[in-house]
Image (cartoon, rainbow over all chains, first blue to last red; front, top):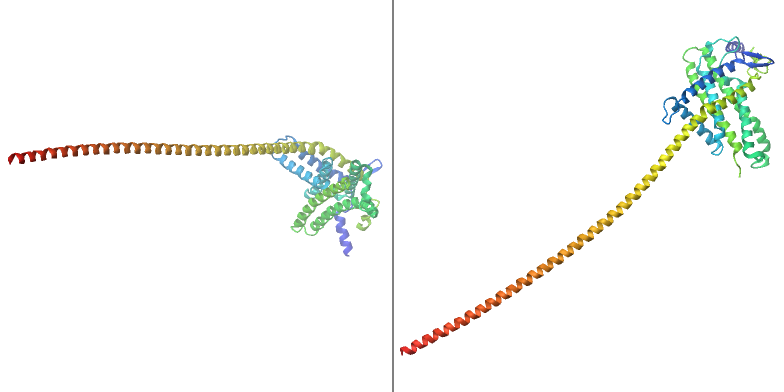
Length: 241
Length: 153
């Protein structure tokens, strides 16, 4: 009885339904790309407007963009270190902006108003493909950062205090992307589901605090993702003496 | 229906991993390059240029401040030396005037003494001459008296 209730309601929420695009032999989750294009388009328009007329004496949007730039620089500098943070700042900043814009865009824009033949529009980061893609990019990045900065000496990191650490360090290379992707995916999906269920059960007032909590979680998740990515890169380029 | 779709379903489901993953990765990498040229580079240039400008100005201001402090110290020593010089001149003038005063005083004293002495001598002279005269007159008178007395006899 209970399970039946849940399943019908969740079914109404359309969990795990996707808008499939078939291109030749490959299948894509269309709703993820649609929302990400809309949100990234908005982000790029916003940034173009802010950087159109750069002045030494910042006004309006330029102030906000400079604040954002400063925030990202501080984040990458504290995690990666003074020496190479410049190379990785655009990547860390893009991760932060992408995750942040995706999370908040998914939470703030009433996507429900747009009806799709299958699935529904929502935060691109609530799709496992997106978060795994981001996490794998982070993994590739820290390997690349370590190898390009230290060459083969990068692998000293695996036996750094003692060779006993070797299996754990190898395990870490798998747990890092796993935890990164599932943390983001789980948080954003859970937020969407909780809000969805609450709206379904009590359409008035009650979902609002949960929505605010969702906004808070979304921002925190963006910060956590960017910080961890920067930390992993920093760990890979760090010199052991 | 939910249970069926949740894990490992061939069609749909929460963990349905497909070509969305690599395409999304390509999209994010592309976004990194776009944002780098559109956002991170220009904003970074402006911010770092301003930071350089500000630190340069702070350095210049610091240099100027230290220069001012040096000049101030210079001025202070100059002022002090001028003050001590003035003090010296004043004290010199004071001793000079003191000396002059003393000299003048001495001179005046001497002169006064001399004129006093002269006056005293003169008085003495006059007194003695007056006494002589008086004595002479008294002599004359006594002689006269004596003569008269003798003649009357």
